[in-house]
Length: 198
Length: 198
Image (cartoon, rainbow over all chains, first blue to last red; front, side):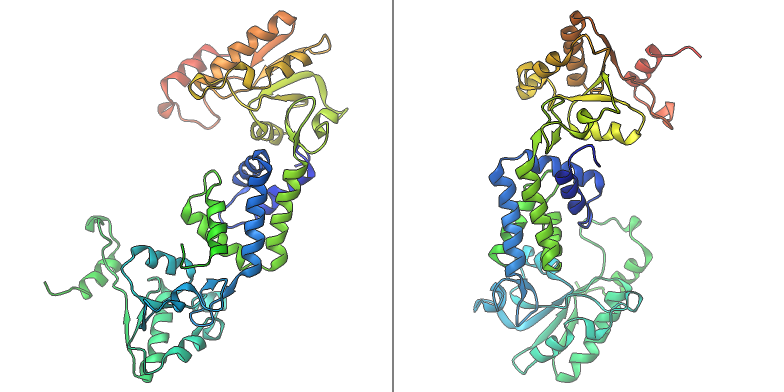
């Protein structure tokens, strides 16, 4: 890429390392950024440096935050007797956006995957078990419905049920607005198994 | 977004301002970046700051670069008698990737668009006219085949032809591998008009 300049080429290279950003997008972003007013470009650089330097995991739920306790764990308005187990902070954000969940979370920071060499010791399971005291009423498992998600759900269930807590998993079935005709068989089967009395 | 932290929320906000990056992608990128080793995240921030600070336009062809003259204009190996006119540095990069063009470029940094209020004075036309001396043999116009691209091409042609230089425009027609059945009528018409003797 010696037809631009080494600095722009370097920026393109750094941007292209980001997940989901190919060389074309990286080029587009780099040209956009260097043509912005100085303070705009530096604003992004500053935000990045600051966020990376203050980033840490919440001591309670292991989500990404910049305080010892994340805003959710620190909030007295949340129901700390119900813990929803999610794979990562993105999934936490997805449930927060529904605005319907009032409990707290536990972020595993991964999922058990023998294929990728990720075992139970590599995700935040110890931290989950440590949180299950008498004060906790229910653990809601909200992992993806992949093979890994299913296996991890069963593993967690076996791990925390002996501690005398109710364990549930979010429903698997037809998405709202989904057309039966185009839904895969496994989902149809799960939707049937999980049918609810009307 | 008070369920993460102000710093991460701020980074997400900055990323979401970039073209083609929505809130979901911005979130994904932000979480990825703050979980990378410190030097990786700072590497991107540094590259951004450096590229923005050294970014300037080439004094000859107006492309983005970090030197007074871009590597192409500074190269004695290029044919400086042929100038290809492109809309922006991305289009220059696209032609450079073909590896077949040996002339130099002129980057307009925009295109005439009455709809967007961009007139001839807002793009690098003065700079193009100043480059057309007796030493220049041909101006190749390589603008998109949009209404704006067509209008700008005609404008440029009228501007530089009186200076006694040959003006051409890259061919419009069926893309390589394109299926006639699925090509729009205007393209079919242009391909017919631009037919070449075999």
